[in-house]
Image (cartoon, rainbow, N blue to C red; front, side, top):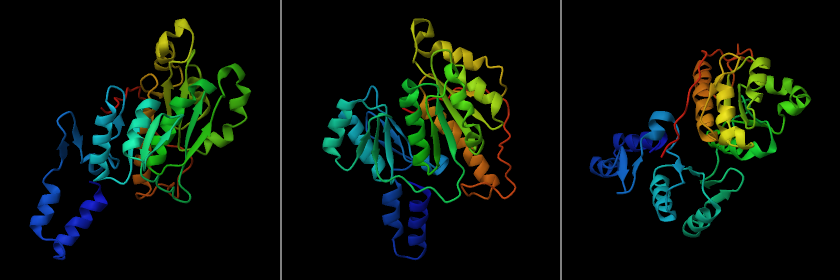
Length: 281
């Protein structure tokens, strides 16, 4: 249940439009719904502002369907990440109002929120075209929160002029998410050019000695550019949530709106941190 629905219910009780017993029936299953195979966190949006996101790998299509239906009773927008095409086909057969985003491999149920005029954007960039699926997962999660996303793909260090041609554009973003495989060098370059927060996402793209993303992960953790945040391999979802935590901190500074405060100078000051982000179950 999100804040708006809970507030509306409480107001209905206060104005005697809803009997307390009826309200109790609606609230008694909170804060979670026990499906036997899953305990769905219905208070996630109250605590974090966003509903629980479904991690599809390891789940059957029937389990995903049950979780989606439970979440949809309490939330206007539900996302299931990392869904295979075969999973998506079966889920959408039972819940046809959803859609499957092929690049990000995400199932989406409900309408995406509109972005507010003048809202700060988040840059999502990739070193190569092969990194795009991870970047698209990140971009999708940001967009579910109404955050504008500025995408810049295939600007890796093998042709650094491609990145340098867009530096002024990137400087207009509140922060930057960088997805890179191979040697994982791009976040260090971006961190040396931009003064805002940089979130680095190592991808599993690369040849043998890249060790399915371990090599770029270690490169990013050892970056000489201070203050880069690093998430797990291929974790576009975790990068998006790290970005949202920073973005929301800026929003509070600006009075709760998703746009820059009047004195915003294009920078967000943040501590030097290197952290992993755990994906929801």
